[in-house]
Image 1 (cartoon, one colour):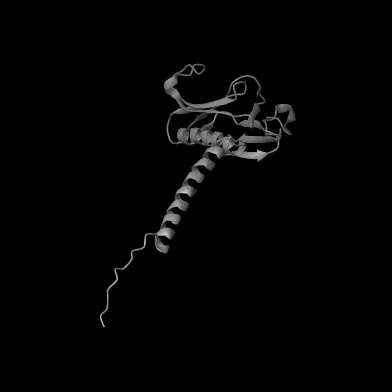
Image 2 (cartoon, helix red, strand yellow; image 1 turned 90 degrees about the horizontal axis):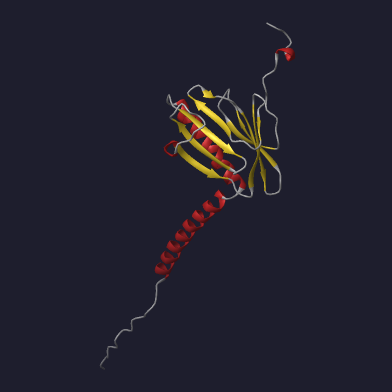
Length: 186
C-alpha cells in the first residue's frame, strides 16, 4: 500500500499567546491614556487647582530658604489668578516678565473668596502678596476659597513654621495681640 502524503494545511490565525500579548499591550496603552486624561481632569478639579496653588507656595518658601533670593506669590481675587516671581528689583510694585516663574488661574469650581494676613490686613479686591525670604514668610495668613457648591476651604500660610496647609471650612488664624490684650505689660 502506498501512502500518499497530503500537504499540511497551514492555518491562518493567531495563537492564544499572540492574542494574550496583544491584549496585554493594548491594556497597558489604555491605562497610560487613562492616567494622562485623569491627570488633566484632576488639574481642573477643585482639589487639583488648590494643590497646584499650594505647590507654588511651597516652591516659593523652599527656594527662598535655600538661597539669599526673595520670592513673592501674588494672588489676584479679581482675575482669579496667581503668580510666583523672583524679586530682582527694589521696586516691589513692578513685576517684570523675566521674574515670573509660575502663573496659574483658578476656575469656576475653585474661586478665591478673600485673603487675610496675620497682621489683620484683609484683601478682597486688591492683589495680595505673600513674600518669602531666607528667614521665612514676611507675613502669614489665610486664603479662603469656595468650591463650585460654595463650601469654604482655607489655605493657611504659617510664617512661624513655614507650613502651608489646606483645611476644610473658613478657619480663623492667630493674630498678634495688642498691648491692651496682654496679661502683663512691659
